[in-house]
Amino acid sequence: MSLLKLGFYNQRFHLLRFIPPQSSNVSPSTFWVQNLTNNNTTNHSSLSCTPRINPVIAKALRTEAAATAQPIKMVKAIRVHQLGGPQVLKWEDVELGEPKEGEIRIKNKAIGLNFIDIYFRKGVYKAATMPFTPGMEAVGEVTAVGPGLTGRKVGDIVAYAGNPMGSYAEEQILPADKVVPVPTSVDPITAASIMLKGMTAQFLVRRCFKVESGHTVLVHAAAGGVGSLLCQWANALGATVIGTVSTKEKAAQAKEDGCHHVIIYKEEDFVSRVNEITSGKGVEVVYDSVGKDTFEGSLACLKPRGYMVCFGQSSGTPDPVPLSALAPKSLFLTRPSMMQYTSTRDELLETAGEVFANVASGVLRVRVNHKYPLSEAAQAHADLENRRTTGSVVLIP
Image 1 (cartoon, rainbow, N blue to C red):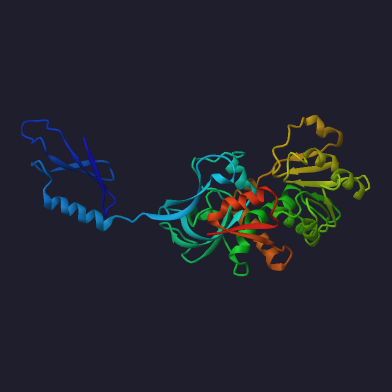
Image 2: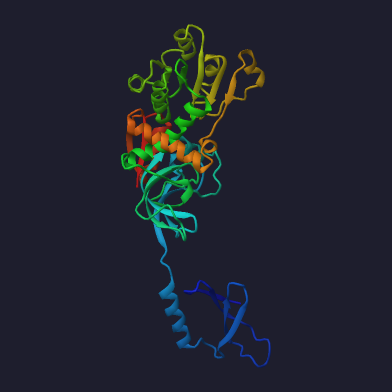
């Protein structure tokens, strides 16, 4: 049996199919139209008992199908078909549908690049599907809204960070409850560079470990996207900030961003230097996004009952640590994710609102030091992964 599927204005599907003869009264070449209604009942009507479809009927079917067919919208996006290095990021055409109930479509203006994108590309974190479009952060203009949706309209400038993954695209469909409005005081490139990193910094210093005046904190990768914001925010809260960086150029930036003490870890041992700075007391909290290369040293830098906050692993996953290793100083160890700190709509709005307010007030100075065309995402990944960037990196569709 052969089938021809056609779409009609009433959203029912009409299947034109050949039905083999089941009685002597039916021609061997009889065609039928099967109308599938919403309640799955079917009606059949004979179209022709000739070896060919009646030309008038065929023309009518073609005319209605052409008049009601929705054109397929194609957009450019970065796709990953296999895990690996930056070279697996491919610039391709992808289909984009219409937003459904509770969804919006946005045309991206700027896309934030984050280390989590590298983790998914390499397979450190597992994507839900393969192939997939990477990216966890973007700002764009709403171009369509799903049926019955209120609170969002075409023309709104919105931002999102986190799930769903797929921001490396010219346009994308998003759940409306995952986006937040971008204040007019914050331009799209700045907003795209700070949504995920800024909200990460917010939950790290305000909720995961609540930094207060008088605390001493250690921030690894202090000149990076999140590290730069952590230094500024912790300084504004009254903490003494120690930062580690890899070069003198990055050390200068970390100083500008509020680090009271900067350690170039390639030139000196950061554990010994922290011990010297704190007169042997240690720090209240370590914010470590480096992972394997710094993990054990970070634990050594903590004072009794200190907090080890490991929120990334740019150098690789740390080796397993027995619980007994935490006992001598009664240390706390956590591996937080922003998604668990913005899981409700209220948490998301509160977190993003505080980030945007601090940008507007000048507490946070956003450094968008690198911009790449979205089509050159592979080069951007290579530069970020090899520590050739400082501050935030943004992809422009």
